[in-house]
Length: 164
Image (cartoon, rainbow, N blue to C red; front, side, top):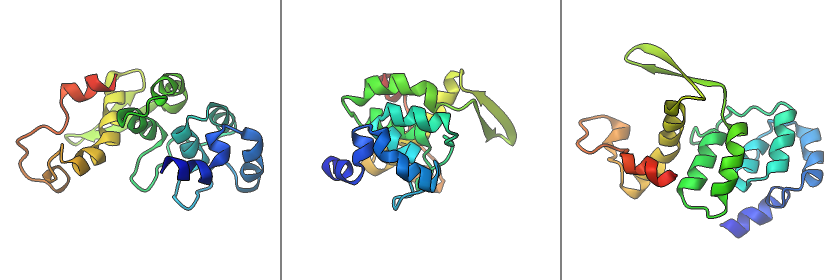
C-alpha cells in the first residue's frame, strides 16, 4: 500500500511543492481527489512540511474531514498511533499547524468549548481518530457504536501513554 500511495501521490511523497503548484492553481486548495481527500490531508499523511506550509499560508481549511469524518489532525494522530516510525518526530513539528483554535462539544445538553491549549482537546481528537481502528481490532466493543451497556471502557490510560 505504501508503494501504491507513493506512486499515486509522488509530489506529496517527495514534498515537491513545485510539481503540485499547477494542480493547486487550477483546482484550489480545497479540491477533493478520488479518495475524498484534500491536498492538506494528503500532505499530512505524507508529512510533507513544505506543502503544508504553503497550503496553510494560502487559506487551506484544516477542519475539512474525509469519508470517516477525520480531519487533518486526527489523520496525523492515527499515523503516529499505528506506528509509522518516521512520523512521530514529524508529528511534533506539525502539531502547531494542525490544531485549530478550539472545538465545541455538546455533552449533557450543554455546549462546551475546548481550547487547543487544553489536554481535553487533544484527548478528544485522539479518541475520535483511534475509535474506528479500536473497533476493527476488537479492542472496543461494537455496542459502543450501536448503544447498549458497556462493561469495558473503550479507552484506557495506557492508550494515551502508549501514544507518547
